[in-house]
Length: 352
Image (tube, rainbow, N blue to C red; front, side, top):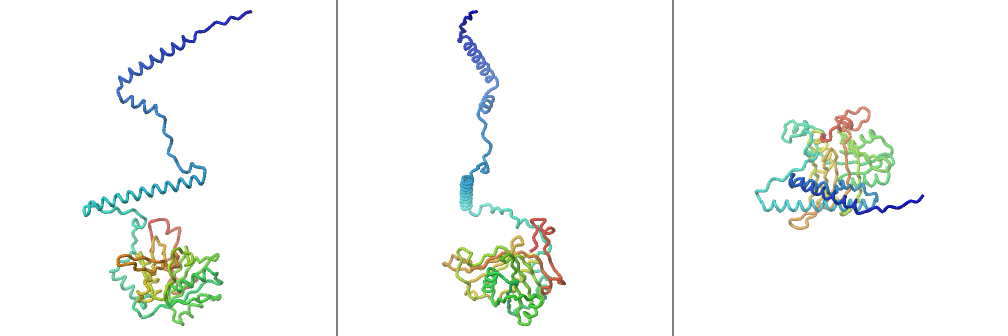
């Protein structure tokens, strides 16, 4: 049986397709004329390819590339901030006195929950308490401070160096080794030798982690957690070693009754009249119940400019408890104890 191939004309269907396409174009043109220019914009926007989603640096799998891109992004943001700051400064200079007041940024400190025990310096009750508390003899210049610094049993090298540097910061301070003696036995010996303070540095895993500050002879006794200790050798751009001049003392943000008593506890460590020739300053700065200690020397570069050199050491304190009288771990009466789960529930409530 023979098969005969029949030639199929290819031009016919192609012509039909062309005719259909032309009819569709005519219909679209008529519809666009009826709808107006808005439909054209909608069609063009729909015909455009969809933009990709917002790009995230976490999508970059290569760690080095991701870090490089992150640094570039940080630099760009910093440049934008600086440009915006310069622009605002120029606008303020141009406006002069008519410039609007500066915006105060919202921080945890200025949104702090009001504390009822905030001290008013002009309050008569506060003045009476200051005149009759344990530090009244010091502030009336009847006694001069004398400090004994010791450690826990078998101190390591870092703790010993920390105590020695504290003794160079606090005038009339003497470092003695503990030799396994209990604090209850040390305190009567300190009182008999006219010491006004007992300062004990505790350590854990060769690192200083605690401080007991006991005012003699009648107390109070404060227990602090110590963190972020940096000795002089570990500091960048440190100045020369401190001299024997009496430093100035700066106490910042000790506003409540508890903070006021802690501030007086620190103030009584140093002699009354600072020697300004040494140009040395000891600062206790309270921020969010963390007490930051810094020791600086200021330098007069010219009539208008003043520079500072950090002498060290530096450390951070966190108050754990305040006890009435001298140190007594069993029968001592506590004025204030830090309870983390109860007191730290609100981030904007501070106690100092």
